[in-house]
Image (cartoon, rainbow, N blue to C red):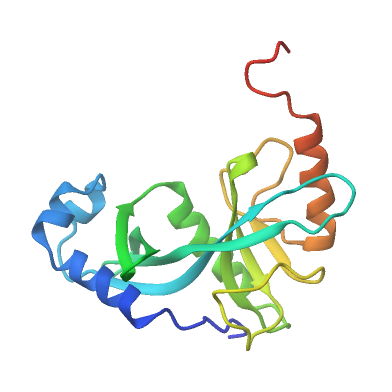
Length: 195
């Protein structure tokens, strides 16, 4: 398998395990799949979740920042939910459980990446300005998963649901997708402006 999953911080994993072991956290989560699953639930495939800010026309490199670590939560058969952690002044802490289309889409994108000839470090990259989430396949497999910016030859796989005009699950190099994103943001009307 050419995917080199970076290790999550141990406190982030411990916080997710503690939340999974807490009947209150699971019962109060807005994730019916967690409440209805029979059998053990395990956190798997920790992926660093980065946010891409500052996409502008003209080729200036956008900024990325680590927002947290996301774990897929699996029952004995398949992922049923996800758990996010975040960095607090006291260290890594559980944030919340959730479910929805990004769970299956993330799993599909990871399966899609497994047979690729190039070795990659999988990460998630959120583009809030477009309500978009991608699987970021970073070519530097020895990099610290918590830092760095997308390199021109890294691949981005838009997850479903993708914004209109962007094909979900079609891998594109960063150098190909960033200009499309810049154009989309440059032509998008601002909220509150007449169309």
